Amino acid sequence: MYIYILLLLICKVSNAASVEERGFWDLLGSLLNYSNSALVPEDANLSITELGKKYGYRVEQHTVTTEDGYILNFHRIPTRSRKVRPVVFLMHGLLDSSDTWLLLGPNKALAYLLADLEFDVWLGNSRGNKHCQNHTSLYNTDSDFWHFSWEEIAVHDLPAMIDYILQVTGMQNLYYVGHSQGTTTGYVLCAMKPEYNSKIKMMFSLAPEAWMGHIRSPLVKIFSPAHSVLAYLLSDFSADYAGVDFFNKISTFVCTIVPARCDNVLFALSGYETKINETFLAVILGHSPSGSSTFQFAHYGQLVESHRFCRYDFGRQGNLAAYNQSVPPDYDVSLVTTPVVIFYSAKDLLSDPKDVNILIKNLNNVRETIFLEDFTHLDYVYAQDAAHVIYNKIIRRIISDEEN
Image (cartoon, rainbow, N blue to C red; front, side, top):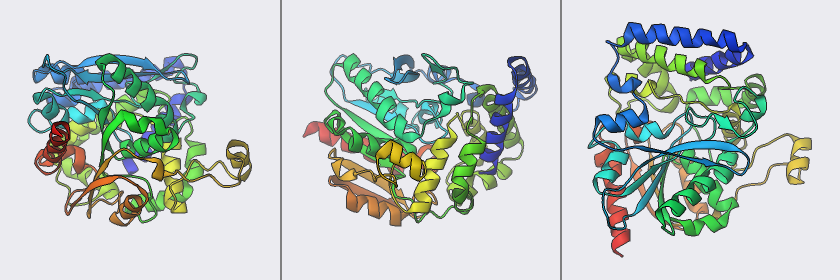
């Protein structure tokens, strides 16, 4: 979390600088690239398309514009089969991107495993991350560009990508796999736009985030009461991606030299005794954090404090203007009718089993819950044994569903 707070400050300062001054970040990044290119793992510095090419997979980039003007670049590993194959849509968590689903590499990363079975694999991206820095009428240096939470991702970004995917593939529905914030947005989408329940054949939730009142991360518990202050002070978070890119480069370098230090900082946030290989941290930090809005953090902070799963709290007057009531309304997850499969863990400090059980009781169509004893919040996408423990179960469930 301290790393992320530092990142917020870097982005805030860089946003206040002139265009010429922002070149400073590019210069530092170039120098750092030159100095550590022989030290850091190659995968830390490869783009998503370069990662796919390195391991023999074709990764396409697709672009769609949301109804509120955000231009989203997202990715596809097309099926190699001439037959109609299931479409699987993977949605990343907070501060991540489509890159996340490839970083473990062949035979381990979910995207590659699905592609090996000739599934049609699509990798989503949300507004504000490194792949989605453009808008039809705003620059990413405009504060208005960053005035969104994950609700806007749910009701604008997901529908735009899902509709595009179904149009391109000619399919009527798809399988949805979300991690962390990717689960939050999935629930909000189906609750606020129930017509999308029929477009999602099954939803797989990894480390679900909805109710968060029992969160155990000590750092999040410290900072969540200050969510409104942080949102105000750092309201232009990631408005200059050059600062974020520089942070990725320097953190990758540091974690290559002293991985244990990065281990301590990162996992105080999401869970100790992680399954993530220390030497793999440099690869992760070459791609994440990937950009976000502080309002996303603030919204989660509100959930921690309120013990509710509800819309953004703008304060009494703001709520009256936005919702015609003094407090933000709850998300009605009983409207989520698509079948849901939930993976959760005792060691996840951000997705506590008590909160997950509240979610399970409020959902109407939970098909299966898989309880894991020893996965932290980041292990779902970065643990070396994630394929054996989680991904193979997802694949078997999809195959079984297709056969029936």
